Image (cartoon, rainbow, N blue to C red; front, side, top):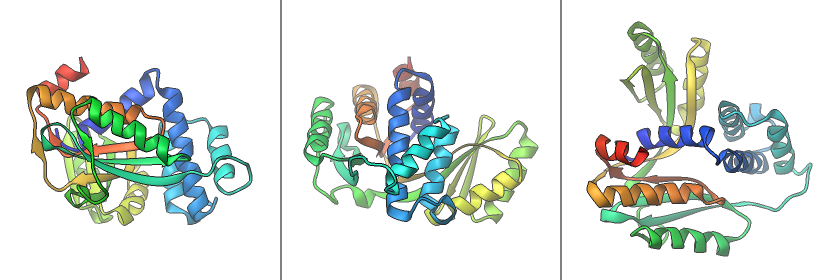
Length: 250
C-alpha cells in the first residue's frame, strides 16, 4: 500500500459509513461551491464542477445540497468566501505530506494543521518543500464482476487515453493524466461500467517504506488531517505493509 490507493478506498468507506457523514457532506459542498465560483455554475462548461458534482452523487450528497452549493458558488446565495490553500509537511519516518484545504480563515486552518503534524510525530514545512515528490493524476475505480469484463473495461480505458490499469480483487484502478480523466470516465460510462470513484489526486513519485510504530503514526496523522473541517484531502508517500493496514483498521 502506498500513497493513494488502498488508503483512499478506506477513507471513502469510512466517509460513507461512519459518524463523519455530515462532515463529508460539508466538504463535498465546499468543493462544489469553489468549482462554481472559479469556472461558473454550468457543469457542462466546467469540468471541475462536473467532477465535484459526480463525486458528490457517488457519495450520496442530497440533490438539494448540490444545487445550494452551486448557487452559493455562482453568487446566487450569500456565504463566506472560501480560498484554496495547499500545505506541505513531513510525517514520521521522513514521509512527505500534501494537504489541500478550503478555508475562510487561514490562521485557524494553519494552526489546526500544524497541531496535527506536531501531535503525530511530524512537522509542517514551507511551500515547495515536498511538492516535487508528487504529481497530479486522475484515478478512477471501477467494479468488475468477471475477469472477462475486467479485460474489456481495461481496453476501453486505454483506448480512451488511460495511462495505466491495475486489476485487483474484482476492481480496476485506472490512472490518467488529469486532463483526460473526464474523457476516460465518459468512455467507461458508455460501456456500462460501474464506476465507484473518479477523482484528481496527488500521486507520489517515490515512496518511503514504513513499518511498526512509524507506519501507525503516519496513518494516524493522515486520518487526523482528514478529520479537520478545512481539509479537503491529504496525501502522503508512505509505503505500508498490508498487515499494518489491517492492524490499523482493526
